[in-house]
Image (cartoon, rainbow, N blue to C red):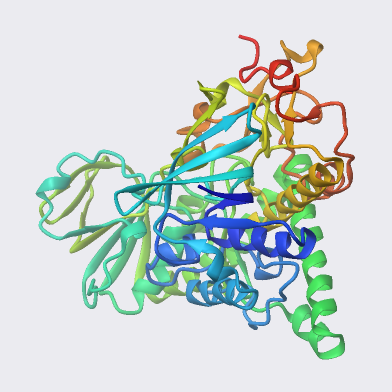
Length: 497
């Protein structure tokens, strides 16, 4: 059985970024990436629907070690995929990936101080061992998206498509398209499909906050003309981090002011009547993610008459379209169910510690990246209110620090451990103050967070830079040990009931 210092699960944006950091910060340590699919790229290789693009700027979504040089800050999917593949190839990381290896089980042995990983490879079970397991598999199922039950769907005479499994040969030229949903995917699809379709209708149950930003960052272009590439990139990255944080903080302390600002911008783009009817949410800004529209492309499609928005609920699907709760009928040749993701926890891997199955809802999350009582397991969960990569890179830095610390001290195990006075610690959902449906559907399957550091998931990049990047590893919560020592008994897998 092959043994590695670190095994990374997932060869997407996070996994490739983690591998780059291990190369830079942990020379001499061995690692392997296990990827369930046959290609690098994760989300950006899986999704192929028209117009797919980033919903964050690429100066914060790109790697700190690899400047984003494409002029578009809000980039299309193929450009992002090319960037991730190049980031892997230029370091030889693509040769350290085992493709079509779906990790099914992970078993920790305290006696041996290692994880044993079982991966399915084309029907064959393959086993690998590692000291540190780093799960970078994202948080949603690659097998299927979320589609709610729609009465009569089986009677529809046209084509039904979920964006997660977009047919390469789908011809929507001159067709009537109804897109069910109001998130980033739906708002990307509308202007992209409107160029060829006869009519595109976005059908939403309720409105979402939408903001238009330029697809190119003028400041970034100016800095690149004046400064070395890496310096210009990092200044732009920090500028955007601070702007994102400022906007988010304003939504928390002054939500009405931000709401009025957002709606005012929309009224200028679409007119007061349309905004009042279809673009005025009932919740506060950033209670759900803001939808980013580059260069106002959604608004242009609506103004052209090629696209429209309907706010209503589906009563039933009919052979020729959709009947709404209001009685209105939407004729359709194609129905796109942009109804969200199916969230899963740590790739649906079955975890055990010393033959005991891990129930993650019965654990506390250590800094949003480890679990109480679970040794040598780190996972990446990016930010909800900022670019995913900002947090994934901090977590990867932590893994590098941890691996180096264990090696320098001659230790093998590191276990986040609840102290005696924390056994009955008040608990909260791992992701709180954020209410989209895809989170609510899965939150009960996730670990919990407590009421104080380090058992909280802050969603605050500036704070995480201190608590993840700079805080000492020997913090009285992480228990370091070797096989046969007492760390396992000192750190129960489950919190107190």
